Length: 311
Ligand SMILES: O=C(O)CCC(=O)C(=O)O
Ligand SMILES: [Fe+2]
Image (cartoon, rainbow, N blue to C red):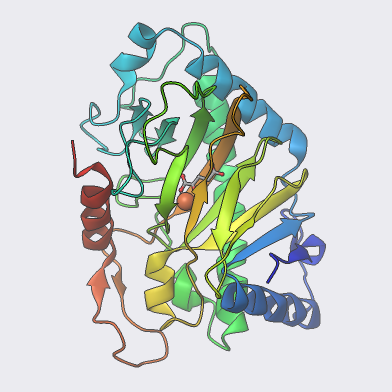
């Protein structure tokens, strides 16, 4: 089963007065994609390739700085938000049975004025990351509305638990990822750019540079590639959303492979991980008890423990 591409133009950012008929049609398509595959490409969302390129550009500039200039911004060093900041190569293993992932990342998890941002050599870094965070937030709220409509539910079922995105009592994070060139001689056994995992929260938006490598496990257990399609946003269901919908929307396992041996290319991506508000209690939206209610922040923290557990 392939990952579908949907035209989002009737509901693109900035559009108001969307007809009920158009919303219903789009929500049915979204439902089908998230039920069959758990991943969908959206085109004509209003977020254009120039915006994405700008964020990738400033992010690459940051990753290219010497380590001594990135270290002061390390994840774990910000008292208002534990998830904010820079993560060095091999620090995370998204599949804990593999060696550390061959990737570097910067998490924009807090928009608080207390945050000290990288600026030397990357003057626009804060503004570019924060503006893109807010654009992704707007698109995510539109997708969450369609997801509720697709299930025949009130839009508020999901939106009401995503009121605080961008504050320190909501874990939503924009993550810029950089996959450095791979030296096949020093790669460890079973090491990947990003190990098999499913995401933790409600949904994730993904923007990729052209090099490829992202694969998604389909429902018959095969990995299929999820290439970069310029001008689109790849959106996927995460685990808390799967619980919330009693397994109607599926959170698919995915990974990022190493480049082919001898190819020394880098790769970049941007992932916007949408998380419900910390205090939101997530219980099955069909009224069943398939999963016990869980507090959003408790669930997120338990998942972080797994990916950083070895350190
Ligand atoms: O780099 C990518 O394309 C995806 C990364 C990813 O799946 C993640 O960080 O959760
Ligand atoms: Fe992921």
